[in-house]
Amino acid sequence: MNLVRPRFEPNKNRLRSIVGVAQRGICIAHSSMILAASMSAMGSIPVGSLSECRCQRWKGGNWVGSRHCPVGPQCDVCYSAAMTRPLGENIQREWDNEPLSGELWDALEAKKSNQATGLAMLTELASNGSALAMMYLGHAYVTENDQASLNLGEEWLKRSAHAGSIEGQLQLAVHYQRQERWADAEAELRALAVQDYAPAMYALGHLLYAGRSGQKSVLEAIRYLKLAKAAGHLPAMGLLSWIYRKEKFGLRGRIISHWQCAAKIPSAIWYLWNYPNSDRLRRG
Image 1 (cartoon, rainbow, N blue to C red):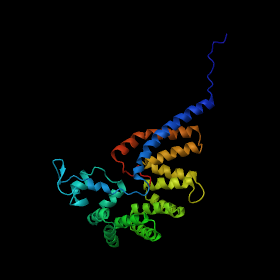
Image 2 (cartoon, one colour):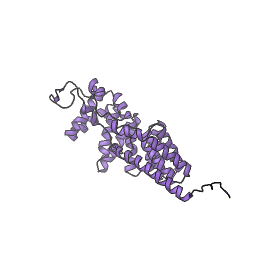
Image 3 (cartoon, rainbow, N blue to C red):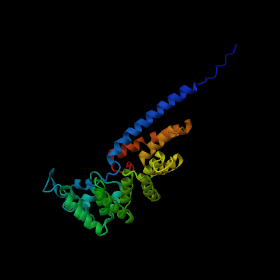
Image 4 (tube, helix red, strand yellow):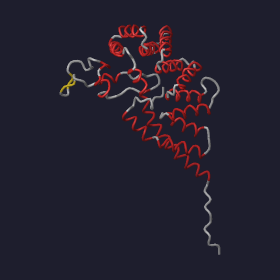
């Protein structure tokens, strides 16, 4: 009598189905959290956090006089330790390096109450060489509907990019995408990718995978998304997971991709809760 236990032969189709369900569950959980990061949606520029300062005008739980710091971004307390919602890493660096930051802040505050006055102040600062002012001015114009404003805004964004503003060049790429000028957008994103800016690498990988500017390039898209992932960019991990599953890179590759994606969920939760404006969450 044969008492040897028969070898278990798994049903391969059933195994693939189980693994597929597990992969989709991981991906959906990850994507749901990353989707919440769309508060930093493509084309948006976080600028309002500096007004949340709590300097000497905060006394006994009440604001004394204006709710905004009278010193503006030059106030050490308000600009660093007491900011409740810090800006993204790059835009914060550009503000730190902006020699006309005080005047620029006044212009942005004025623009909230009087568009014409604010734009005039931004134009003066941009004409004096402020790359950030060029970016904010260009962004204000390209969001208008008339062609004259679009052309003017594009010119200011170009000048901002040429002056060395990463934010200005990213906004220029976003503007080109809105206009469906995919080749121009790709050129700007490639230039930013050379500077190791993770949101641009992500946007470039997304553009190449979609084949917007020409033939779809899966391998090149994966290369840029891996670079963004290596820089800690969380949406790049989710898109990589989707590509590995969609393009059928094999069961082992998909399992590894989803495992790495799941391993980053704690980071996603931390950044969404503590630093929602971080470049690690930014899609463009």
